Image (cartoon, rainbow, N blue to C red):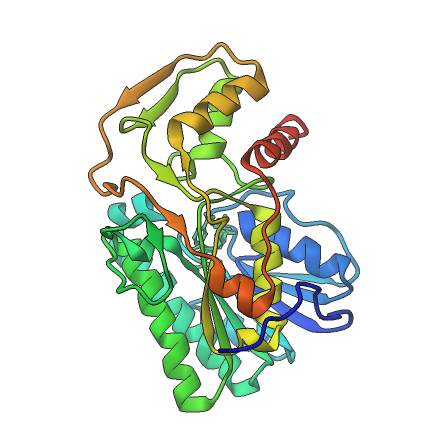
Length: 323
Ligand SMILES: NC(=O)c1ccc[n+]([C@@H]2O[C@H](COP(=O)([O-])OP(=O)(O)OC[C@H]3O[C@@H](n4cnc5c(N)ncnc54)[C@H](O)[C@@H]3O)[C@@H](O)[C@H]2O)c1
């Protein structure tokens, strides 16, 4: 068994990092943290799914607009040498992939392979890929472990799993070290509401506009909601710690929260009088309970998520108020 590593982060000041999807909900928080720690950051994003105002003006930040499947823009981006590549760009998430599975395949699989091939010519210290808890799909037990057989039930989940395999193939072929993190229901600042977006920002949006909160299902369904700062901690630890090399980690909290509890907490925080309405579950989403076993990430990279759901929702609310 590998040694336990302490949770303090490596000094990354002065490193060159590429963040694809760096304007997105998780990506923009990652970029902010990398800049705070003194890294030089290049963002590649086509801005197809994220608004403006997510990224700061910063002397150490270069923003390049383009599609990860476009070889011209990739040649331009990779004319710079990167120490770390954080690959987050993706079409997110399940519902969008059901609407257009071929576009999902193009961006999440073909795009990831393109980025991997360009990065492999440089062999950065690490290629960090953000995968998803959704690839576990239906399992008999509600606790997800990295060594379980994946059971993806949406095109999105299948695309995230396929791209994991490509990270491994490129390592086998060209020796580029990778780390895969499987994120679980990230929430927090810069995660906007919207038709295809996440439950927490949509609940906030409705509560703040006195519209009913819509729960699809009985409300007893659970997920492992992870505050974005904890996701970012895990991503940086996974990419920079020796113990993360060529490994796959669950990044969650290890706790499950019922959707009805999320609705109650948001109504309380916002002091909203919105009603809660129930609809039948969406055809593509029948997973009743899910939480992540995070013992591997704790043991091997010192991951230690610390934000309670109450605190995380309060911080998310503060962001909604300031926007
Ligand atoms: N947020 C979560 O709960 C969660 C859970 C599991 C996995 N993930 C994974 O983490 C990563 C980041 O998620 P997020 O919540 O920040 O998503 P997001 O949609 O907020 O960000 C994705 C970013 O990628 C960009 N993008 C999309 N297509 C692109 C393309 N063809 N070329 C260049 N850029 C493109 C979008 O404009 C956006 O800024 C994704 O890979 C996602 O699959 C997220």
